[in-house]
Length: 487
Image (tube, rainbow, N blue to C red; front, side, top):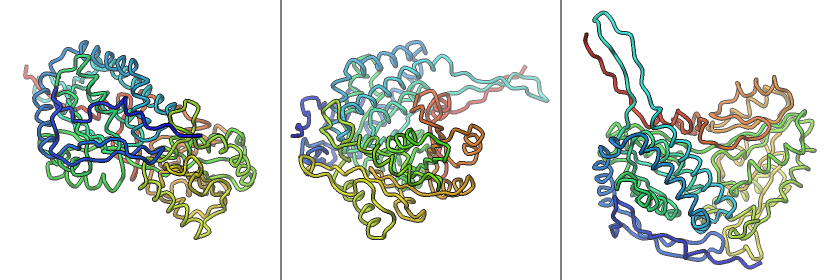
């Protein structure tokens, strides 16, 4: 099966969106490579420090304008942007596939999730309220209001750029903020196109600015004195550098970082469903998801039976052309990611960390030139193995034994991360006990409800600070002002 070339006809103007302008950048350029073929596509001009200055200036100029927009008009603009994203669904899905190799079905899901975020938060501008407080000993009236920070710097990742963008900009805009978005150099196109659509539907220039770039651009953005709030989605090491930089200006920072999410399978679980879920939770988006359940902890008595069912279930994830609607498994994002993931697999083999029951190598044949890695499953893995403890961010599943509930809790929590956890059991009391005991921001029991915009999303420990989703995200992008009036 020959893999189609990247769809270059759908790519937008690659220059930054700064206010209503598309200036030539003062930065370097990045040669984009299509993950499915390993071939170069287009050269992406990267923003530079002066572009960041200009974007922040545009956002600051737009801040009083956007704050003064009536809440019903803010709602209409968010709904109109959601509609525009839907009207350009095929274009955005093809663009997303070209960006990072995501199969078009998954790209469409990310686009739909962005629409859902915009529509959900369109309902919030007229519901952001304050409080009235009792005061003493002097007679008076005291109230507090939520108001926007002003200019929010948003740094999004490459693995799901449309969804990641929607999850952050929707509440930030609904709360009345202007934004400067930095998509990574690997995946700049969808963010640029969404900013274009925002201008087309009537957003004031400067409310949404996009400056594609590498780490240098991110550093210039998070250290800028014109930034009032930072939201970063990405890796822990980068988050630490951002926090150090932001501390110089005392800029508040929220982060959504990595995970090594455990999936606990008890002996009473439906093992067919548990195997299917184990594979799906790990292998979706080729393992490149922060919430992916990459550690299956299974009760001793059903370990071997579950392993055999996982071996069969993983067959549904076969490499394919990302442009085809029936493809379930695409490449990882680039050669660097490919080398890193294969390093984990090769070291696990050399160390005898577990036995391979599926995959273990690069995909060959028609997929040899792209960045494809076989869906890989290790069983009987030592709980101290590197592949159990480190975030691989690739299609690698480790299956580890546990004896009882206390052992399961100890292993599940024995990690620096705390983003998501999964539990498979028919015992409702056990499910509640385990959910209470797990150190995680999110727990899914006997399946997953996905990531609807109405629910809080975020982690604990090294998985991040702050929350997206629901009212929590409105609070994340708002600050409290208190007012006292003497009587």
